[in-house]
Length: 376
Image (cartoon, rainbow, N blue to C red; front, side, top):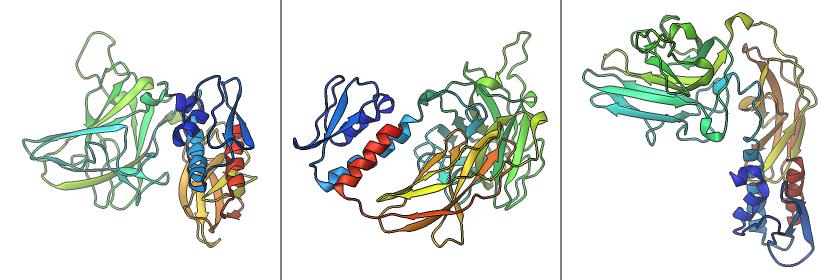
């Protein structure tokens, strides 16, 4: 957690040095120090300019990652109140998931977690993939968890939960997984079919499945008020339905909580003021904040030729900066962004902006770290 509270601790960790609160951390030889003022340390941290180029680049990259992680520790936002899942931070598997299977049923897992798919998504750059075979005598279940471990409080606002779903083949309500909810007090609901209200899921088309919370009944018939609290939603259970012995694949993305009577059809205005700055191995995008009160996120589009733009990532609506790492220097890229509200309305794309990456000198790399520190 210290690395999140102060990214300069992260810098020292990257460079294999220890930072002692209240004392300057000296990295490298004693020559012309660059002074970076650490947040909460009470005095400047000294980073010396004389350092091997490879370590400087690791330091700079590590600093940017640390600054990005630091943003996770923050107050709750409109986004937090409505988004249960949008992307996996890492490829391979989604950390906030957990699965189990009893043969002869089958369930695709990566380290007992949901696989991440980068070829299908609603919100770029990925979604999660649920692939199963439900067989008589077997059972499977997969848990999709909220990010409570990262310090986020549970305070969702809405009366309906929605999932964006996609399948290469049609899935009927009987064939679909069953779903149940569990709140932060470990109180769960009874299971219902994921597709109970929407009919069959058509093949080859993303469909938003919405389920009112009132459809989730208590797990047991009781005379008291012990029932799942959707505002404290902690876990979504997906489990075996019809024992048909067939293999099914369902892609899931953008799990949100919203009020059904507050859906609108008016799209946000196109974002303005997009500026792209090229570094050595990444592009730094900034833009002006949109004015909408129900703004959920921005969507980032990139092009290598200035003509064909593809979605590469998203940014939460309260932020107006995005970093795109592209690898080796010497690349030119073009960017446009859009704004999306909670109802799913997307604005027109912004005007395009472009820049190029190039090799940085040691001095420029350290200046980049300093700029990142003061921005934080």
